[in-house]
Image (cartoon, rainbow, N blue to C red; front, side, top):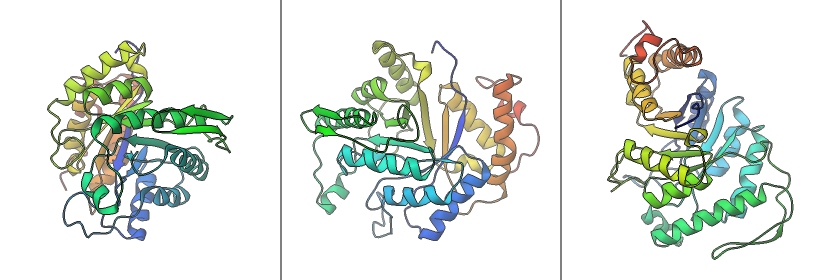
Length: 318
């Protein structure tokens, strides 16, 4: 990357599977209170792993409600399945949540991947090449509608004819768009359109099931795709998420940050444990501010060095 990287941001992949509404709201309010930068729902109509009979609230209606009970934290869906909604509707939903949250929305979107839920709920699930085509058109539709003026578009899959998406979003020129991309064609699409590129390690039974490339290989391919598009790779945020394991101790979280920051990731997310304890609070209110300060002042190595130098003491495993 040629330019300076954006500063680190720290997030929580909270999800909503198996939770009551009060529990889900409490977890987002906790993330807000602890000072995390962003928190995320998933966009699934059912759990993607068994047992499938657990509850799962719909993502965008939940996000609107969560925007009203949080004050500071950025919010998003990681990521919206483009197969579930016409992009015009998604654009309007996103603008609404951006107003409810006073400009705290990140619009995450991807092709959709979980075929079984589409079958069960009677939703069309095109083959992968068409889903990628549809996603690229969807991003174009959303971008055109963001301008607040009359938008017309004629694509293979979507059309606009003098549509006005008003009011405009709080954020200008538009709500930042996060695109999930793990394979070569999607990496090229994200390089063309994303404000934030999202990926995560290859995990069976998820969107990265069968992805052979490592995170480092995907980063290299994404950087090359950005340069092919005439974009400076350093100007695009990149997010990654893992399970809750790094929140077990300050040492584990430091290792997680050091490893992924060395790969160029700017937005670092973990799952939130089912029962967050004192260690999560210590990491959020002690370690993370020290990591931010160290990065801002360059007083401690953040790439290829020991992050514990930026965060002495207070290491706990409970």
